[in-house]
Length: 300
Image (tube, rainbow, N blue to C red; front, side, top):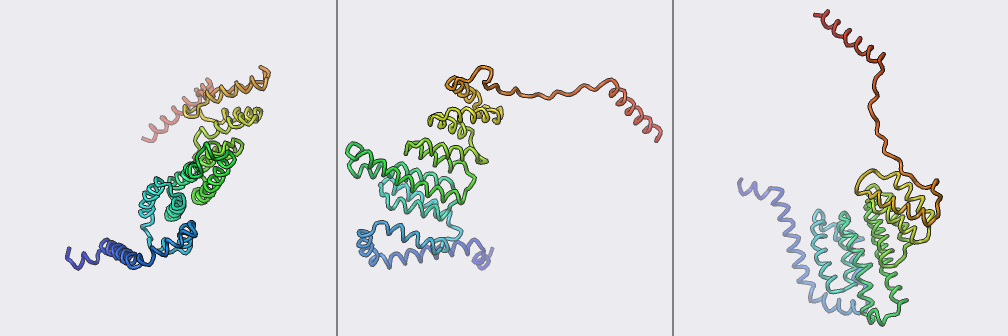
């Protein structure tokens, strides 16, 4: 390949464009840094959340996305590594901004949405409680308020994720788990486990947990009806754990004092056996076969 042909190759042109862009960004950063640093210190001291707003404003105008073009996924992966560094430093303002930035650059990976929501819902309230004196000194009501505030932010993020992935059970399960594990709200958790169980890719356990949460809420009759129908609908797959569901149905029957003659009995698997043809049908089959052979011989 001649040098002139190589210089016109699409791969070379793309690499050259990327390198030119990176050089331009580096030079721009070097020129503006003496002005940026002192000004940023003053502004960030007055308004810490401005960091997030500035990023969101740029994204809203499509500036960053337009510049990165096809490199959005690569840049999102790179920034996620940076996000983990910020997480290790417990910088909640920058963490929130970076999670939003990464998911905006590349909303396709569920990993970004789910793990970002977990950081915001589980880790950040712990940091804030520690900043205010720790679990022994911060009143329970204040701890609950912080948990609720951070959970709401995580819920908003997962709602945004569902705009891109409307039928992904994982995103519904994540909301349910935050309600259950962080907020200790089994009533709202049950609603989301039910929604998760209704998605095309729902794992079997989502419906089982929904039934258990109904029991926890004292809705034993509702749980009984749900689990009976679930046992009937599930396939005979070991992962479906039908024996466990059957045991829970029996427990509920004891608790609800269901009479023996009204208790649930699973339907036996129906095996369709081949039907033996009658003597008349066998004779007709032999006649047809004989006629076919006779016609074939006559043709020859």
